[in-house]
Length: 164
Image (tube, rainbow, N blue to C red; front, side):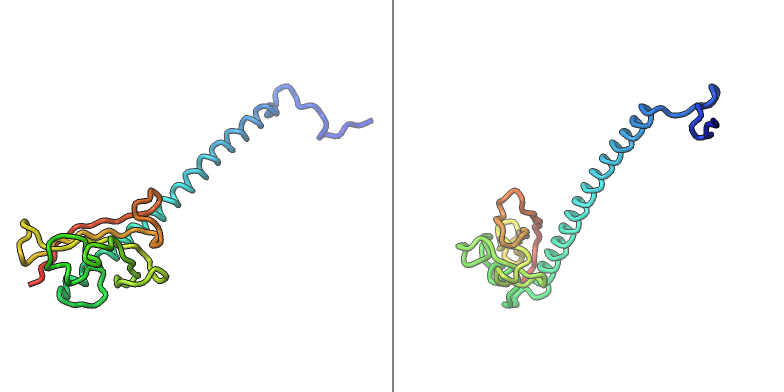
């Protein structure tokens, strides 16, 4: 009876991997893959947060530039024109309403069309004098969320707008 060459025992000089070595190598590969996948998901989350911050910064710049370009315009800009000439305080509804809703165009809107929740404090003070308004702007997302909540995302900026 002839034994097939595949079933023969290897010669003493030929080395082969044992089952323990193969299992150990596979275990190391799986461990490394789990770490890489964990880093990949973290990278995607950080990338998404970075994109949101860039969008918030761009929208805040748009809102501020719109008000700087037309400091007396009474349209639905997120920084009310009347708040620039008053003492530094909450810009919405005479101080009673702390937040408002803003769309992607930088204009005030309703909650259904809102992209961000906006808080604004504006006005003159002793440091700025009567012709320059200090403006504090905070954009929060999601728009329907509570701006004080830990999970919401904030972008805050303080700037000065001349109006005379």
